[in-house]
Image (cartoon, rainbow, N blue to C red):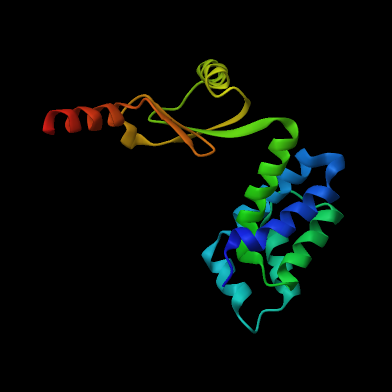
Length: 176
């Protein structure tokens, strides 16, 4: 089977071109659609030869919280009819990358051992934007294994200032 990135690229590019008028709204419903498509049981149902495209479509739209615009419904029907439901998360990721490139943004995931309040998150975001030299869309995920500090992933770059990373560095230095 072809790599998911290769399968997803034409879908992401077509959707990007079709939704130029409101990329942010399209990103919201596409992200939710991709989250629903990650469900293992949904994938099994969609792969069942007894399941029709209409049943899969109705199931997905029924689970989604937000109502899909007509453009979103057409896109979902196309993905389902072509048997590409498993590629939806990758389509969403590539769409987000195209959207970010147009707006001059990058996605940043901040892993923290503890929840960050709004003021701390703003301070971190400003520091990271200076460090990486670009505007960032920052999301926070909790990771209690970090013990303290944060770990930031921006594209393929990682900035790890966590206690766990420092302990690992000390372990390597002491065992060398």
